[in-house]
Image 1 (cartoon, helix red, strand yellow):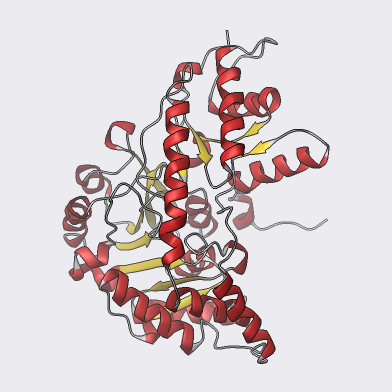
Image 2: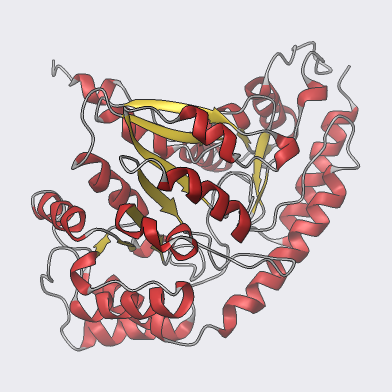
Length: 400
């Protein structure tokens, strides 16, 4: 019998991956299931990016690379930060990992100690608190209200910071809500952080290019350059470029932090796959016209989904400006019963009953730190969304 470490006991499996896996298993059993849990674009990786990977294979680009990214990819990332975010990073201030998760893991691994606090606005991406917990630091959650589009206020942040605060996490556009911070909102938040020089900032910009309604994207180091040395600007190719399986995330940040992250990575995974890095170079440097075309599809799906949800009995939903999620409220349904007498006492009961009775897999809001909601990913076909909405509506109308 292997005795597991206390560290691994402090974390739990990803709720979003668990729902996706459950949907797959039910489908394999012949059940008619519509999975709306995965945060993964349903589009294919663009041809010019795939061709760059094929060329890399044919040219023998299949060896070890520098631990935290090839010079070619780091140069492409450097150019991207300058082009899109007006941020200047040197190559030794850039780290490349096997997805955004590894970047976060590395950053927290080399900075967190017992007694350190990490401030996490809720709702949050499910990975953040578990990585913090793994390193025996404390997660301090700050509940963000639906009335403020699930965004933290400067006052909330100011009141939450203590001498023990090591990191503050900011995710815009947000997973799970799709909320985007405006330039002014980021400036007001940055003013609080500037007064607290002991606080580092992780800004998760993975959904940067997935924005709608004329929304402009800003990242916090761009808005307040005085914070740049304390900001780890995280991004990747998974979402905008439909490259989830290629596993490339990257970040720009303080040189000493980046060096320490590279040191850790040299003893864990070593370099990300050489083929994926070559493809990521083409993704960042190549044609981007497909992004606006796909965003129009996502926006149309969002609009139709919102219209349907807000016409359902007991369901209401804010309009998000980014990502490919909606975060509807099911609070009016709590306390009702299914037609076979099962009482719905919380959002997890709701999502479980929805899967059982309607064959629709979504993720409960409590998994993201906010009870009474659920997350739908609309990174799926129009047909799936239409059918799913019909099923959810019927399920809600039949509750007693």
